[in-house]
Amino acid sequence: MSRYSDTLAHRRVKHFPLPPVDWNRIDAEAPRVLGFDYHGPNSRLPKADAVVITWTSAEWSALDHVMINSDSYRNPTAEHWRDAWLHYAYDAPVDNNDNFTGNPLWGFIRLVEINAKKVLLLKSDAHLAHPPYAAGLSHLIQLLIEQAQPSEIFSIGTAGGSELEEKLADVVITNAAVMNARLKNNQVPYNHETISNSWNVPEQFLQTVRENLFYDINEILTTQQLQTLCQKLNHKLQSSYPLEQLVNAALRPPLPLSKIRLCKDKPLLTTDFYYIAPESGDPKYSTLEMDDAVIAYECKSKNVHFTFIRNISDPLVTGGLPDHVRDDWSSLIYEAFGLYSSFNGALACWAVLAGR
Image 1 (cartoon, rainbow, N blue to C red):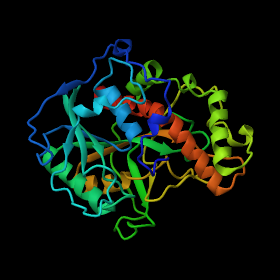
Image 2 (spheres, rainbow, N blue to C red):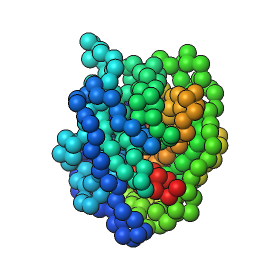
Image 3 (cartoon, rainbow, N blue to C red):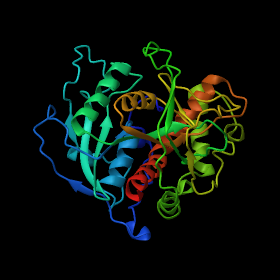
């Protein structure tokens, strides 16, 4: 269970619902849901000023909660809200071997209005690390640009920490990406090329949203919860690692209120394999994820702006642990906290759209 594996991570956390969003605290209104002409999965997309893409199931739930159903609590196990999302599969590839990620490509959509902007929301089932790999994701982005005709595409969701200073549930915003593909995508012409565009982020408004609406991860990040995860790790590995060896400053409760880390021109790293930074960190990158360099390349070629908003769901792992233990511990942290960190990321995306 990790950013690499889009399974229902939020099912594992059963007793801590996401709270409603109290928009009155910042004198704002919730996004307004819009209808549009839909005639099934092969319909063309509606026109939109911006597109927001998210990826895993936990991220999808947080996006829906902030953008669609912010007036109620969100039980992490709830799935009824999915029924209102519309399947989008225009010109999607057909795979008779059932190698795709659980749903017919491309994904599921809704349309909302934020600050007089039409915003298309997409839960993508096309991923760089799964068939049809970069070619499929590139085609999806091309369709989004051609049909919705947005001026900007956002990618939001979970990510790995690149430095110890990036704490669980922090949010990283950047305008740059670089790919390190090793598997099915290493022949793309932009592999290892940093792609960036202009910076357009309402920094003061983002801080207002952070101070008033962000989820306090300490509500669920407790020593007891971490001890439970430590026991899971040791049970799986038949090991006896102490919690003190697994927990560092990026994870140790109580954490300060999650920060928004503005990383202008500092690229995030896109990989097609599950990568976590070495113990010394990887500070040349703003954060670590698995799709966004493809979006940067396609947007840049079509003169469409892009912004990447990533929440730290699995911070840097230290402690002198073997690589497989670091991977497993990182995955357990994602499994337990990915939904809650994604709530902060979705709010930050709303703030960028609403604050301009």
